[in-house]
Image (cartoon, rainbow, N blue to C red; front, side, top):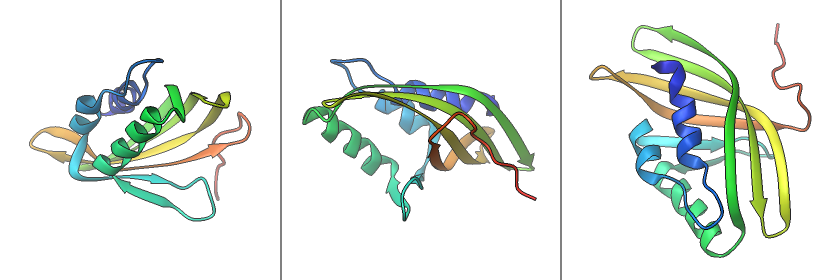
Length: 138
């Protein structure tokens, strides 16, 4: 179940032209205080789950985002008692008003087990310019 959570998030984020993300599915994956942390730029952009969803919906409504398709390439999970981290390599295809682009990167999902259910406390990510996704550190 734990390693399947990223696929549920990607399903919730992904949508085709003329539709919107599955907000209910996204919300069901996170704790109430959950965070999205975009660490692609010079400084992190940190948003609550409702703020992240609102940002995506606003960009769909104003035509900046036409569709998103995110899928998992691989993942690994580490568990220590009632806390866990899943590292998920992804491919994201984004269609906007200026065309389409595909990005590759890694999402790190920090999770807690609450009442027998694993929920995400935070999801942070970085994109890579090429397909060499993970760098091993010493």
